[in-house]
Image (cartoon, rainbow, N blue to C red):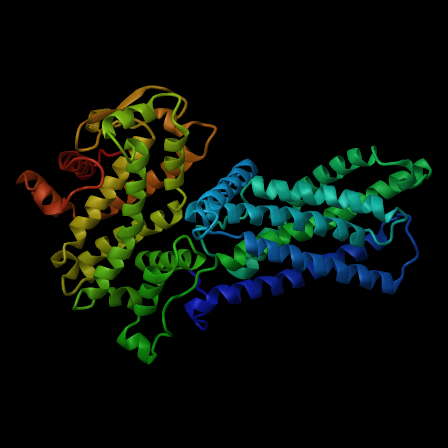
Length: 543
């Protein structure tokens, strides 16, 4: 597993990666444009006489607007889904705040913290669409610099392409960073991105060309160039190639954005230095504890922790977790438990309701059709499912490796092993409740289809409630993330059980499984349900 250079400090890693992305973007798009221009000169297309000054002007213009688009990519970038307010909601929120300001006087901000955050996200999306429109207009004109066609018509076609690309980018949520499962060398990632960007660019350029061609039919005759059929076909081919060049440059920029920002960063001093000998884990712990929620720095920190916990490329860093005072191990485990506990709490709020009579509100929310507010809570709980998956994997790997690598027994003495098992089981039960799985025992462990409407009984520790599988409608992405995180949690529990199987089997025979491996009050499910679930894992019957 390759790792990034250790040189920069954690606070500056984001700035360095943004600067690196802009540099790599400029180099790659310049190479693409120069190579494509050379190939276009070899094609038998009618064009104006070659002019070096016009070519340089088009090249600089294209690079300038690509830089503008790349900057808007960085503004919109986020490692996790971020909700945005719709235009009517944004308008009425502003109108309501203005009315309150006039009636009761100004008292701080026009928006609450949540509404202000969603409003700011909406403004970013609108700004991105405007940038796409402007960049598409001038980029297509620059890419077709040798074409005998009106600049107005070319600009209109470029604007349509920019709007199509921007709308597709926002609708598909391509601004969300997707961390790869396997970290590959940069050269391989760039080469793979080249072949992936080509069909995407072709698809977007075809859509932009068709929509802009339809719009061109409605333009006034004075903006159209009268030409023969041969010249008209020649111009259309050249316009399509120009749009494709721009689209390919944009797709490569997007791919470089993903590659550069999802590279692993090592939160540790160089091996052999004084800091590595005294406290090599402090940099990682500070990033885990002090980084803003849902930030790129937080994702990089949890990703680095997962790599250190699971792999043997840096065993000296993992050995530092099990130091004699157990303070470091407690902080690492707390950092892993925090996302899982927040995740489980959000699921419980979405399933049972947050206010009032919990049973009545739960039945009201779970009755089809599902309440949109309850569904939004469930859907929002999976926004940070990557961090939850890394936390579960790290927690399971450290707990399993503590069997051999924990020389001082800090994991067992501190009670972190029982806390880890309890949290993982409670999170798994909450996720299974969302996907409509019965948790009553081994005979009822059967998944329900997301399209079915059957009832499943879920025990929450207070009383049994009935949950419908409508929470995982096929037209939404909720069930996909739920099944993924359920597999991660189940694998993590099996990883711990496989190492401590003999101890757990002895506890099960002596009827002390509850006392030895279930600690505290679970966030979801009764202790008896968790014991039954753990017994299924011990018997390798949990599916």
